[in-house]
Length: 211
Image 1 (cartoon, rainbow, N blue to C red):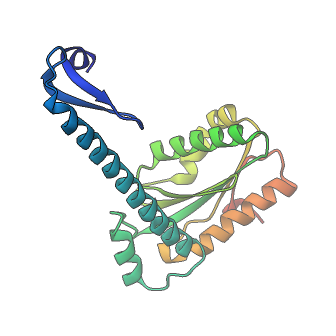
Image 2: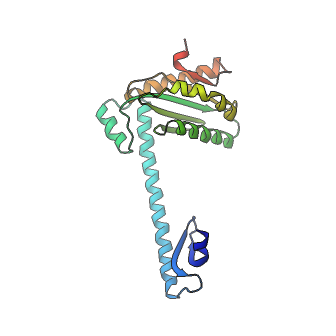
Image 3: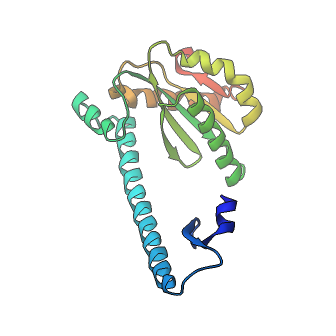
């Protein structure tokens, strides 16, 4: 890439990236200057349009997840049609994980959330998530042979080491359908609340272990 920039004429865009022309650096015809300006402007407009589209798609995606978490989807057909827009297979069961990060510094909370999101994504590439203020919610599909509770019990020591005392993790029980994601979300949220108020040394707690 650096060799291309050395050899060929190129223009840096204001918001990042390079436009590289098949013209030697030492030989740029004046007639090309106007084309370069138009091209750079076109690329900027294209990137702005793509960003706007991404914001709209993100909004619809987040609305769909919120509808799941608050039990606003009641029929398999609606679940199937809306999930297919994002290439998600939500035909099986689900476990919900709610993680809450303690108020330390805003940056610290964001870093912990990003770290946890990376760990969960590594274990379950097909999970979907919702961002909130100092809180992350993960919907993890229960595919065949997946033992989510066992997985997290195994990585709990390393999570404690990485996150310290900055996060509480609450897990729902296993539910047979994503239509029950709202019930699972309530279980995970209540497990989290119980851990914070009564079991403060427990940073990771499962709904099915509570009395």
